[in-house]
Image 1 (cartoon, rainbow, N blue to C red):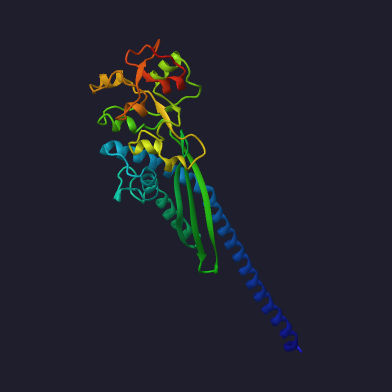
Image 2: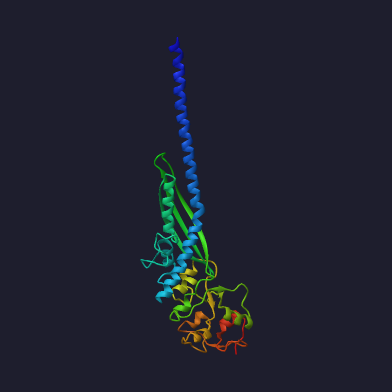
Length: 308
């Protein structure tokens, strides 16, 4: 009789142990699922920041490589991409970017994503499957990228495969204009500053000269074109945006003279023409405080000044 009573108790204990084991596995699976979700979401949140940081750093590095070498970029968009993604310039490691393992590169960030996955008990592969650098407008670059992430937990057979898309806008204001040093043996420099109000009239013209202000103009080169040493916007870059991507500025001949650099007088001083071997006829700007200020008729009309 005692044995008969013990049998149901033993079965009950066995069912309890089995049930607890199943419940435990469900709990572990639930925790693993939450970890996977957190990891996946952390990539979504951090991707735009990594894209911006690498894009900004790649742009600055490209300017420095162009100015430092005195040679225009053969393909500005491609060189910025190479620097931002891999930390190299023309296939050589860039000390400015610190190589592909640097915190500044997108590849370095992708490697850290894989390392971070290990702390979740995951095997992670991250691939950059698409990357583009384009002119959003005359004052901003746009960076777009697509990641493919495959994450797997071998212990629990759980994981995910997902594509991530992000874009970042990098402002050019405050960066160095590469066109001026490329045409002054690297001795003259100017940071990019864009007008916030229309440049119209002689007073505004003189203020733009003093401040080195740039203004949007379809007749001028884009920033990417300037990195390539061009004085006009290429059809390639123009076709990437519906916005005006070119800009122009005044070459301060007084500054060049102070740097003991050669200047060409009585030539239109807007940079897209001044640094060109051919330029339209020009005349002195009426009322300007700058004795060397000559402009062509087109630019004079654009800036609302009259010529002598």
